[in-house]
Image 1 (tube, rainbow, N blue to C red):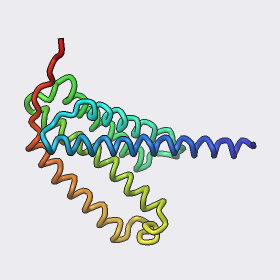
Image 2: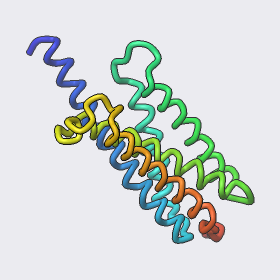
Image 3: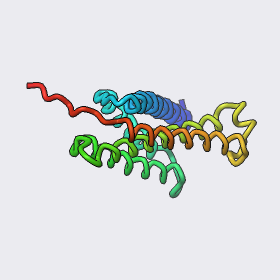
Image 4: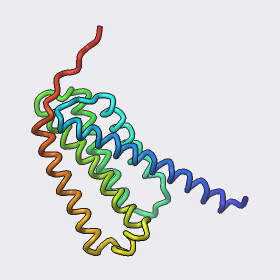
Amino acid sequence: MNVMNRETMILRIYTIIHVLISLLGIFTGLIVLFGMLAGKRLDGWTRWFLITTVLTSVTGFFFPFHGFTPPIALGIMSLIVLAVAFFARYPHQLAGHWRWIFVVSAVIALYFNVFVGIVQAFEKIPALKAMAPTQTEPPFKLTQLVVLAFFIVFAIAAATRFRPNPARVLG
């Protein structure tokens, strides 16, 4: 196997791992979001959502990029939002205004993952790529707009409904 084939194979495996982590982040994030909408803490799911979503952003930085690109900017923004969510959730324990700060930052982080998922779907799925080959066409823009609207509604609803009881200390 020559060097180019080995590098290509390593990049493909790395991409698969990155995608799987991203999908886990989206899955766990949706569970956390629906938990918040139901007013439930879901501490374990929240931990996994934050871990997988941080890993999604971090692993995204190791793809071969040249210069500062939109994916790098989104990865940086995602890590900032995740730091806020982590800070609100753990050191501040969702107390006072940190509750809604956590909800909004967690929903934004989830939205960023879904946004990238939609971009990737329109790049990789032939039927979607045919509808929006440059991702400037109406089907792509409409999809992203509808998803953004849903996330805004979900963020507002979750911030209103999520009033968890403090975690019980076992001892």
